[in-house]
Length: 410
Image 1 (spheres, one colour):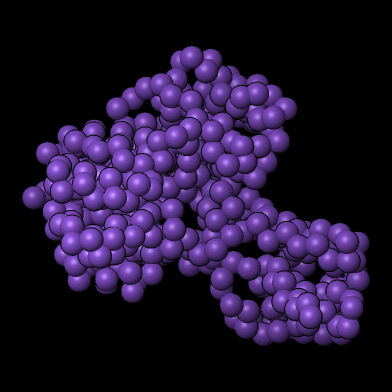
Image 2 (tube, rainbow, N blue to C red):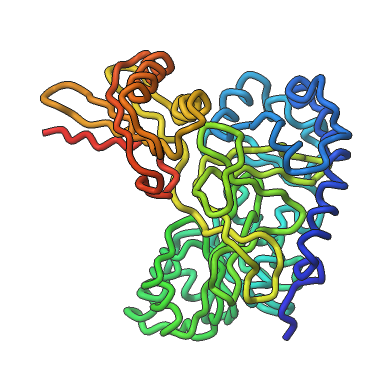
């Protein structure tokens, strides 16, 4: 059995990087044919965006902004040049966010992740992601069929009927949330049904703790996880090495400081930003609101692309304090005005019936003057008074949280 989907996965990293950024200027030119991207990218030499440093200078598009942007310019907010009828399928996901599907055989780039999870030509796949309006079911379906698998479009729910389908079609593989796979296994055990045909699984959309992975493995099912979204499809996927998630081919992933578009050093927790190289429906620096960190070195499985630690929480930590919202980008602005500082974290608590905020700031050179200067910046940026606590470098946890709401209400 082949270990890798194709030779792209084992390329020299420098070769991959060169190939991605050689294609990027053309993708940017295609994106700029859409009115919203044309406005965002105006006065920029798109032909010169040939490195990560140059890409990092482009504006970030936040996924959280898409519902309002699309509502103002239905259906795609002006970020798609092609007509709706030029796509294969049209979806909506919570927000609402409207998403088109390309007409290619594997439009969501999921076949590679399914292959890494052990899916092979001729397998029967039980797909329990929803096929109703959202792209989830089709993301897995298209990738499995591109591999040459037969797909049972089961969708979620209807446990009894699914147990019948499994006994009839004997699927070798499962796609869906880990929670629903457990429901099926528990239901089969109670009803005396045979699910022994399922030997591998690709799960997503919910937490997949090691305890559940081990429970599946004990029942003969090797389950791997994928990080995917309804707008981008497969971003990264787990491999048999079980060491982080390998970033998919044909996309560029950046990890940035929450609330900004500024890349963080390797290993630092930050927000995931993705650029896709699809000329029909490109995304340029889409910030997903999810936190992760890049991992050092290459995967033991032989794939040479960047690895991430997987989902590590949400970057959107906006918190209302004394009736006013304080956002991560405001904390990032404080850091820009005081470059001598390291990590920052705004801690929100209650004293009596009053909100209290304290900005913890890492510095190697604490002083009363610095406390006063940071306090003035904190008030100027947030329009709220707060205290400042200077701490040694490395004191604050590397978890991507820049606002910690620790208020307790009785």
